[in-house]
Structures are given as structure tokens and as C-alpha cells.
Image (cartoon, rainbow over all chains, first blue to last red; front, side):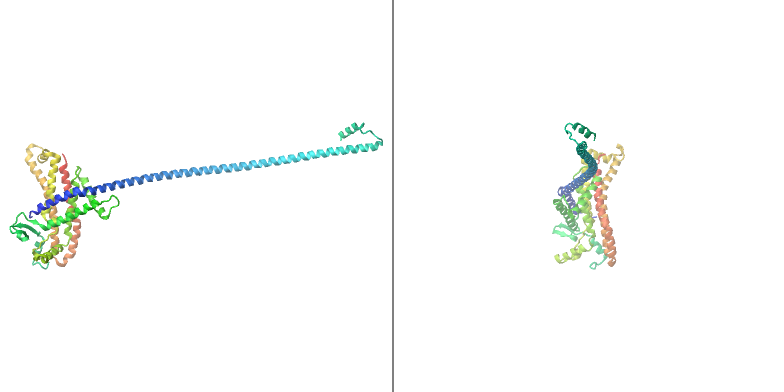
Length: 156
Length: 277
């Protein structure tokens, strides 16, 4: 244990070192560390926020997708319904048309039949008149006896 | 080793500081300084501790100047690791507010650690180089060239540190508690009665003085002992190799631990000084 002037030298050195460290070393390093800590904290917060945003967007997208699917299904349903309705309607209209055409045909046939009947009736009247003329062998005033003929014709 | 006559001489040579003093004939060295009394300078202790202190402060200062807040370089990461380590310890032990404590703790920790780490340099290497420089540079007998490279094995260094801490303890005690509070702390504890004032004062004074004393003697004792063992191991010839290695590995733990203890106790003592009862 030999204390000597070295003690004083070391004491001065220690004081100077501590003073220098306090003034020029500690503050900038600590400032850099604090700044970085803040940056990292901010970054972490931002990433957390982004994650939350992403989650939100994903759930929103899922919702929208489901909605779209629902709508699509609804539209397809409607379209199917409409298609079957159309088919039904067309079928019914076809049926009606057919009925109409058939009815028309029937009425036309009826009219033709009536017309032919009339014609036939007229020819038969003329024939009857000619036959009667011959049978009577005399001239009969066709105009005077026409009411009889008319009656005859009507009876046919 | 071979150039020494006895082991005794070898050990003595390695445990002697390089001294410098001024005599009537001008500046003198080593053996000429035996009668100089107090005014002897251990130039090896001073040189190594200044070198390490300046090295540490220069490195940290330069890093602090170009410290980025972005991705740090490896050096910056290491320095920030040390700074944060010290800062954490200060924060956990010292609850007052002070701009001095943390830089003080950092300086003590790193400086003492670096001085301690000189213990891991092979014991003969630097004295041998110094001897060669003395021999061929200045024409001296290598045995007259002394070089003790671990500044913390010099009691002057450890006491300088602890005296600095002690001054701060007194300063903070007076600043926080005032003269009255400090006097009261010294005289009214642990037995709070006027009769016991002398008794209390003796006990508290011993407590107060024991702090810097134990602080410096612990560091000095540990480092001096480990240096001595290194030197003893070095006298064993070839057996020194495994022993040296083992002892060095052991000191990878001991040396930082001693620096850490010195720093931690400084913080604790100062926080005690700042506590108002």
C-alpha cells in the first residue's frame, strides 16, 4: 500500500472522464436510443393498426362476397321462375291458339257445309221445278206458282 | 523468466510500478525515487488508465456523434447495449433524478472493466516489450524497466475512484437532506435519543467511511490477488499453460463482475445518500 501522487492523477482523470461522459457521451447516445425506441414503438403501433384494418377489410370483403352470392342466387332463382312462367305462358298461349284455330276450322267447315247445303237446296228446287214442269206437262206460270216452289224449297 | 536470478526477484519486478519523481537533479525514475515520499507518480498506471479511459470515451463519443436512429451498426449496437445495461441498473436502483449518476455509472463500469481486462494480457508480454524498448531505445538494463499493466492493481487507482464516489455521497447527502438532515442522520440513528449521540455518531461515521474503503479495497484486493496468481503461474515453466488458461477463463467472469459490483455499489450508495428519511 503505497499511496502517492498517482492518487491525485487518477482522481483528476476520473473527474475529467466522468465530466466528459456526462457532457458529450451520454446525452447523444441516450437520445439516439430513445429516438429509436419511439420509432419502433410507432412502427409497432402502425403495424397493429394496419393489421386491424386488414382484418376489417377482410371481413368486409367476406360480407360483400356473401351478399353478392346471395344476390346471384336470388337472381338465378328469379330467372328460373320467370323462365318456367314464360314456358307456361307460351304453352297456354299455344293451347289457346290451337283451340282457336281448331274452332275456326270447325266454323269454316260449318259455313262451307251450310253453303253447300244451300246450293244443294237451290239445285234440288230447280230440279224439282223442272220435274214438276215435266210431270204436269203443261206450262205453268213459274212466277204464279213460285210461292209453292218457295214453300217446297223451304221444306227441304 | 530466464533473465531473473530468483523467482522472488521475478515476482517483485512484476509487482513494482514504473515510478517517476522530480529530485534536485531533475526528473528521476524508479529506484532513484525511493526517498521521494508522496510525490511519486506511477507512470505505467497513469499511462494505461489514461489510454483506456480516452480510448473508451473517444469510441463512445464518436459513436454518439454519428449515432443513427435507424438500423445501428455493430459497434453502435454494442455500445447501446452497454449504455442500456447501465441505464437499466441505474433506473432500477436509483429513484431520484440526476443527470450525473448514469454517466458516472457508465464511466466507472466501462473504465474499470477495461482496466481489469488488462489482467488477461499475458503477464510477461507488455513488460517484456517495455524491457526491449528500454534496453534498445534507451540503453537501460531491462531489469530496471518496470511495467505493471493493470491499473486497478494499483491502490491509487481504486482509491481515486472510491474517493470520487465518496465526495459525491457527501455532496448528495448535503444537497438532498441539507446540513441539518445529514447531521441528524449521523447522530440520531440507530438509537433516537440525545444520550446516544456520540455512540450513534461513531457507528454512522464508520458506516459512511466503510463504503468507499470497502469499495476500493474490494477491487484492489481482487485484482491484485488475481494478478499475483497469474505471475505465480507464470513461474511454473510448462505447467503454466493449462493453469494459465483455466485462470484466465475464470477471470472472464471475475473481471466484469468486479467492474459491475463497483458500479452497482456506487449507484446504491448514491441512491442511499439521496434518500430522505
